[in-house]
Length: 471
Image 1 (tube, rainbow, N blue to C red):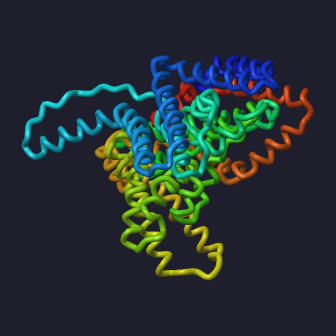
Image 2: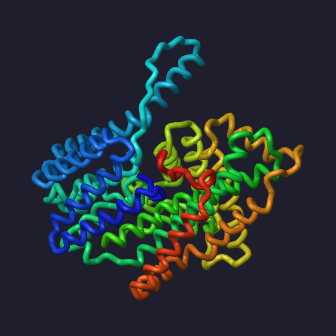
Image 3: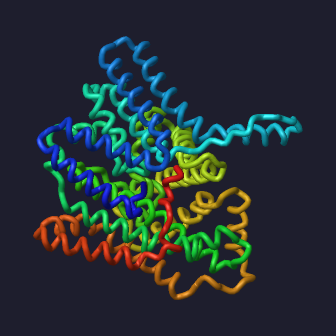
């Protein structure tokens, strides 16, 4: 089920009514949330519910066993069981075909004819997100950062909570499980409505049109465009992916508030970052911190020599690239970001600063970082390496007049920049003020917002999946 589908509105209303009827009864509210979440996820393909149930039950059982044993060997075996079960499913559904095809190509390049099976595996929606969410519980229990959860019902609701189930933010068990105790719906906050409509507006009126008018056209047929159009397509995708993904996170945060749950912020004006390190502190924050805590720090983090630090960064970012998709473009995208982080760390170590940078230096850092990130997005967006190289070659060509720089495309791109620069840091304050309005006035605002969204959204531009659904 999509947040932008018409059916989602009655689904949400029915869920809120059921939660209201169960007020004061924690098990009743957990049951409502669990059923609603399974309906939401099973809307695409009910057979995939078995996967999320399997991961949930596996990690709940492993967590319970970890709580009853102190033997290091047994604890490692239990952790290995959780890792094998979760990453095994993720590996099969997301990466099996990629590795088989890559092996066949490598053997062919060596002159070895290989008759490997052709795998056609359907990728379950959101499997990367809920797998990492469930794994965070097992890892935290293993490292004794969290006590095992005694309630299977609460744990199932934690893993499958529908606001952030499909595309994040990735919520840690120690953040969400405590919120699912007691009468959590009593904390429902109508301020979440503003987050929801803000996210919908970004998705429908900015992200989708940027894809339709700029990014999709350039990446579909890069040979038809010259340097200016290619640059506009790259800029368009840079803002499209930010607005699309952050829109989903905004809606998730808003829905969480309506349910009485507080989900973490996932973006903080990432294109205002003055360096690559700061960019990853602002972009997809819950994934960045997941890799930091569960991969980067266990590898040694910053507590190692320069060579090992560089290797750690390259490993983590390459794995992060592969997490996004089973293609060499994603691997290379992650490696490029890893190299950028290494280069910045080396430069910073050789040019230490005693105070904050000057405004000129900061703005120069923002421009350089934004354009480096935007160029890397070419690898992320292109369907294959050949297309990415074609886009880069057209960016360097000056043999075709611009055709995409019309008023609509330029106005949409300018509006996207304005939203990033002026609105992102203010939406939390706006939501609090909205939550303080009288209920009739809130209802009138919701009615107007729904009417505007319904009447203004063009189907050819706005009837699209969220980009991160494919991950």
